[in-house]
View (tube, rainbow, N blue to C red):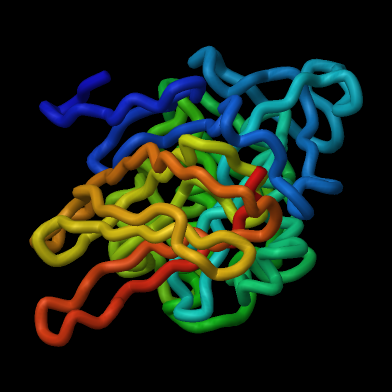
Length: 306
């Protein structure tokens, strides 16, 4: 799959969403990603639209097209919180559609994500009032709490969380915002620009870490090969990884290539491993400092080896 002259890394068994300069937005419906352990409870979405048809959809309240969430099929997708440095961090959810993804985002970090220190800049009590998708633009209507409180960094972070979460879906490239039913061009007193034509991922470089791991999400049960996917901006485009078993022994290590020179680009690796130790493992992804060889931009993702 190509776009803009850039090849999207193949993901066996994964439904690959749109491509942008930010990389492959993969809905991780993979046979390798079996369970999002301890993360998915209570995160199902509503409705029956899969977010990939390109047709106009409008959702409010608890249903879409009259179908209850209990009967709707679900997909694995990604929602975005903030790490301890207020940079974007990915988490896995099972949802029915884009509405369900936003509702899961508004519910905040759960389980292992909280243990990792993930937070959200979206104020408590924020509600999804509606979501419409047309011509690859989503218009999301949020309650007034969304633009309450916080400084410029908080406003930028919460808008980035919504935009990244929605643009995972194949038929959404940009996001427009409404607050309490009224379209807005800026969010908050700091004036984060979101209109009039909407905003895309390219507006949020300031909220990206040097290495953003999008697959696997924290708490995932994995088997060999472990699919590693994300976006990065590292020295000489190199992204290093190390997989450790429950005893802390390194069972796989290597490197792949992503983005460099102030340009984020996708990275991908299919990590083969063998171990007799099942249970809690850790996937470490990092950059090696050209100055002293230390690990920088370190991201540690807890996984469950089977």
